Length: 423
Ligand SMILES: [Zn+2]
Image 1: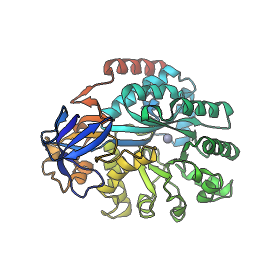
Image 2: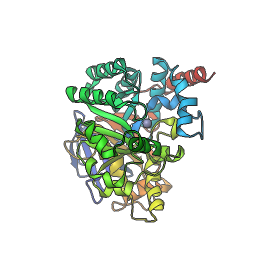
Image 3: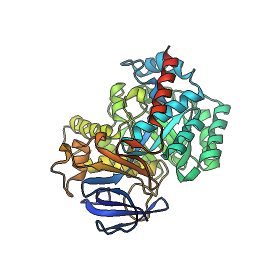
Image 4: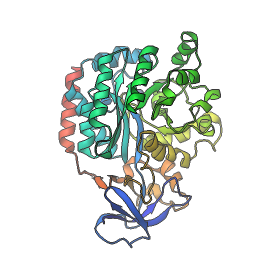
């Protein structure tokens, strides 16, 4: 059986990293042995100089927005959406969605991301990109307004792709409270329950959303989530949560609910600081995401982990908040659970063989030892150190080369489509 050999292995289940071989069978880790003991073919030889971590999960993004990167910079959220983003989104074709998704998948694979959660449209194209690239994803069709045709499209996406090759889960995607009237949201929740699907929803990204719940809907956020039935769906992915009140966290500290923290997008759009310290202490599962490339502008989870760890220390005037181990838990296993892949997220027998191999033979890792791996990864590490990305035991990226993608073709198609959209 193929093995990743002689690696320094760390996941959130370990206090200290350990050297070992990771043996893979049928897409799963079958055992972790002492270093250089595994027999059979070598999938990647770490030679004692590479770290292996569980694959990173980008738990909220809009991959095809890579084509919109750099447009409408430094505008307030609603002005940015209405003046710059929505008019171009109205013109996006299925082909544009595919070339943008391929571009994002290429960027993420090279940075050790093995799974992402996406909300957009023409999602069949994103699904094809996922299947061909070898990545894993949680997909939903964004559902703004009250539109039965779009909901039918989302349900057809689920019918076609939910569970496909064990690498795709499908959720329903009501866009946000400012675009979806409550009766429409309730119909989406009923459909999710009927089909046993999860929901992926933008939740209280801006203060205006909290104000409108209180002033127009006359309801508190936790009561809204409860009374609409959202809390009862299979997996509820709530993106942003910047303005979720800290006295209403017990309602969302549930096994089926995941808050996705998107700190760089929230800072760039001036949306505010999510109270991460309180989320963590209340037992809410928190994952990390980049949001779309038009508001980040990177799809780089290394960048996101470092930024999250630093931001909340500064905001709380407390260096013990958002520790490196907690942040990596958010970026790995919490993202896996939130996106519906509960058998991923750890480097141990019985888990899916999703991992990132990181070069320690470089200046940033001098001083890294089995006792301080997460701190080196979060504070000193960089996506530039990624040597290989593996999903289901298959190498998607190795030593600068894409094994499943034609990178030149993807760059050419994306450049052509970007040019045609902004001409
Ligand atoms: Zn978003």
